[in-house]
Image (cartoon, rainbow, N blue to C red):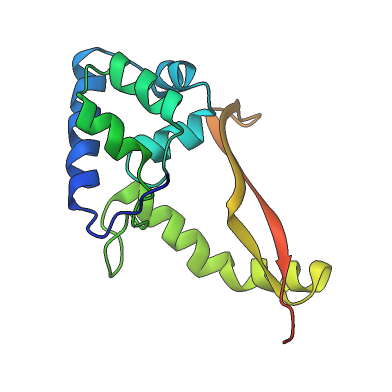
Length: 156
């Protein structure tokens, strides 16, 4: 049976323990995802408290990170989502995403609605990918793919 969390504090505390174990064991998110059998983006979000893991994935992640049975249970609970507290983010990396949406949010909305009509892009039926590619002008570029199912607004 699926269970939902009411208070995100326990899941936040577990995220701290999990990241400490990841660091102590010198693991990558890719290695943790390999144990879970799920994508890197989904597994990372789950360990950081934004998704519930299936039972077998929760067991495997907890075993890899030397977490207890309570952690296995918490990793399977449906979380209270949202990892950025109110206000403008202060972390520079997260702030840049905020800045991107400040600059391109209305453009993205206009283009999505022009191509699809009135509706939203799901963050539940969703895939995320992050890749590092060479920049022809020197250095590196981040390619971030946000792939969400389009859900049309339905009059009722």
